[in-house]
Amino acid sequence: MSLSSMPALPGWLRARPFLLASTLRWLNIHRRYRFLLPVGAVLLLIAAGLLALPYAGHALEAAAQFPLTAFTSLVAACAIATAHRKTHIRRSLVDSWLAPLAAPSSVALRMLLPPLVQILLLALGIAIPVLAGTLSWRSAVTLWSTVGAAYLVGSVIGWFSHRGSRTAAPAFHYVTVRKPREKWAQDPRLEPLSYWALGQARAIAKPQVAANAMLLVLVAIPLGTPGQQAIAIAAGAWVLLYVSSLFIATVRVAFKATRWLAITNVSYLELSAALGYRVLLAQLWVWGWVVFLTYAAALPGALRIGVPLLLLFLFLTCAVILVASWVAMKAVGMRSQ
Image (cartoon, rainbow, N blue to C red; front, side, top):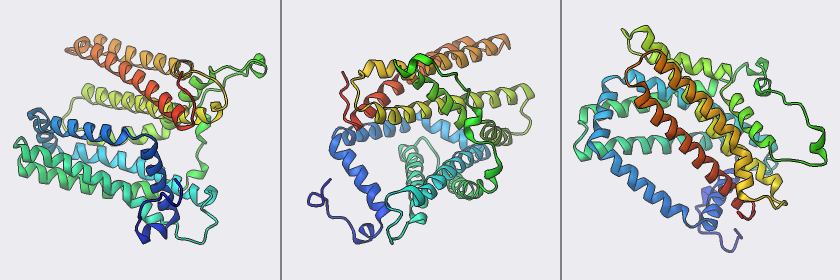
């Protein structure tokens, strides 16, 4: 975006180059992909319609009866997000092209804006069932208080969580080392992309992160829960953590790989296949074991719930791979042939 076509922005925003650069980046994305704004509006309307259904109100009513579970889950998510945001902001103060400028770094604003937007969205999501009459005011106040307290505690934990982390093992120590192929120097292939996705997923869900997440999940389990149910809940939380890590790693690798492949004539289907086939195999392996163990444990409705869940996550994985590859190729100007 040129300076002549720059929209009228507030003076306080122009005086903060880091915030200004982020704003211009989003404006450029909007100018390049005009469909994102109407698609986002349609998705928000669909989400509002789903929240107005009686089922959503009953689910939130049940969550308000056990606020500790929702509190610990939000604390864990907010702490992880805050720690990652803090690392990203501190890194930008060193290696960003804006770092040498004698201008405000806006660390506090960049740390506070994302959680404030998330709190507003969650508060709106709770308010919709109240207006629809499917959620009581008492439960809504409980949920609003839980969300506010969880974000406050999670932000504090995330801000101070990286103290002493220099002595911890680097993330790449948890990635499987693959032997280099001699012929790849003369005949390079796209096969390592799938290894990159799996490696980043293992680094994101490394044992330290998984242990902290499992501790919060176990604390959130209500007292009096049988041991087998507690183990099943913890195992399910670990599976969701690893699956979420696979999704995040796939998107990251797609955008990083297209920067290197922008000068090539790699097709859309080749990139998607190379990026996602091992991710799909990992999903099949994990959810296959989940279905098998739940069936072996004779849990009621294991196959009735497990098989559709397996198919759903496979569909979501394919959708994430295809959409991430297409958007990443468009972002660097590659043709999605």
